[in-house]
Image 1: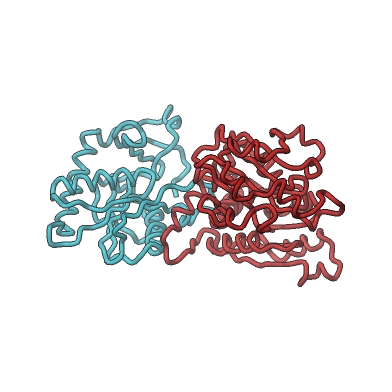
Image 2: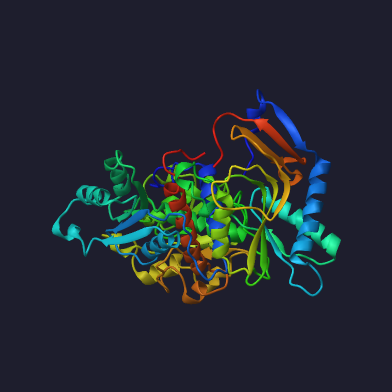
Length: 197
Length: 311
């Protein structure tokens, strides 16, 4: 949920943290880490990758593709909408719902890896954990994020991090993905004072 | 959205947003063991029904409960309304008691509008669950959701609304909503059951059901509202059924892909033959199921966000 209206960039200073090539390499590295940590192989149950819309969803698809490519094991993947579980609904304009796609095999007894683009306050992940609980009972839940920018407001940490980026609260991280934005990149820009929840 | 009082005046974007939300909610709850979302926790929804209803009241109650709102039902019979309390005082009482949303059904056209006017200074949202012969917007939304589900986009689709158009708030709401979504609506009724001023509606008017059926994508049968009929609108029930009832022979005139809707409660043998009502292309139970999701969507758009206007 790190996207910002692009017109805010006019006056702001913008810096590219990851190029399109970097994004691809980072996702590939994370795929290797998942394979190692969850022991993806012929004789283990593969993890289930669930992306948090908007940009977590295509990231989960890409991660699943890389894992299948490297391990030869096909990994169930989908998306989980957290809108109805957010803790800031009252204080924001009404949000449209995003898509939830649960793999047919379900999540009961499986390792579920939540996938998101940016880890910031941790509140999205809290909402995702609640949403997950209503879908079933995974054996364990892990978290993969492309960028960890710090400033946690809840006791949540990621198991797989593409890139750690120490930021100030005034800065803004934008993850761009081809599926949503037409191109791949991670940008850092000095945003206005208003803060992300 | 502050209130939902009528389908008339809703713009296409708002309608589409509501239908998309309903769709999303349906997908979210599909196949779940626990149909409960935390979204409206701590919100209080009060339904006030001055007219009998099964599906609408149950549907609103489920919609609220599935989103974790506290739902209280007040019916005219068991409340202070029976002691002579006015609608305004009842509304102010419910607001003072802490309602965030009042859902009202009332035999007088315009009741919901009046209520919204009286509650203008409070943050309470008002939903019209049917006011006299005026409107029933959530019914039109659930009909549109059901049609969209089966037919895809409603642009250019031909939809017939047949029967007691005069007394039907369902017909009024549907005409506004469906035409707003791009459908071409034809109303079919005997002249006695058409309202004055029908020529100003954005519809085609017909008195011959058999001539219309072969070209329709969907036909919506209306209930004959005996409780609102004071006088002879047609000679007999039998004659009405012969002239305008959807018999098996008539249903066969519909194109193969066409679907049949009825807002319920159905009078089998009157406006719709029993076997037609149970046919696979009759979507009466789909309508009821979609009704809950549509009403969840309405409550979500009215109650989830506070202060900030919908973007």
